[in-house]
Length: 195
Image 1 (cartoon, one colour):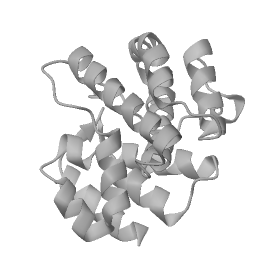
Image 2 (cartoon, rainbow, N blue to C red):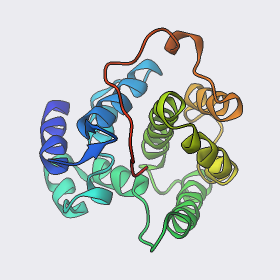
Image 3 (cartoon, rainbow, N blue to C red):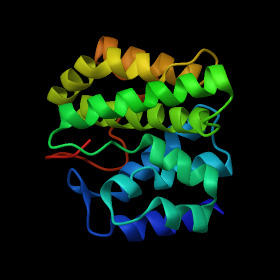
């Protein structure tokens, strides 16, 4: 069940923070974005809750495959950043890997986890952009600078179209869609964050 993934992810991220909030806040926001865009099924929820555990905790692909299944583990590994000594190096290697997996899925029918991983990664970017627009405008500029490579590596026609429409809007305008402008989301998030 997705609640098992939620419990596992919260335990793995333990004392980590997303700005000033507990890290689970970000995970919950990603799962919420997925649901808003019609990807609220159990597999998407699992991947949404788990999407940062390989990248940010001691959790391994093997553990995820055993606990949650091969497709979930592969999708979580797919969305995780490659290793590198700084963001630019990590993102360059990650974008290259994403593009290769997308190509394998589109042309060879391989990398079956690509669509799920791409959907979750775009939802993750939306959650980060929504938060950044409200609390860290400098992050919006960073995401804007990465957007061309991000989109070229991940976009495949018919996969996550409504998510892409929102992320393109957020990057292009730096403004939340009207339905997200009223009030403050459920927690105030500020301060340094690793995204």
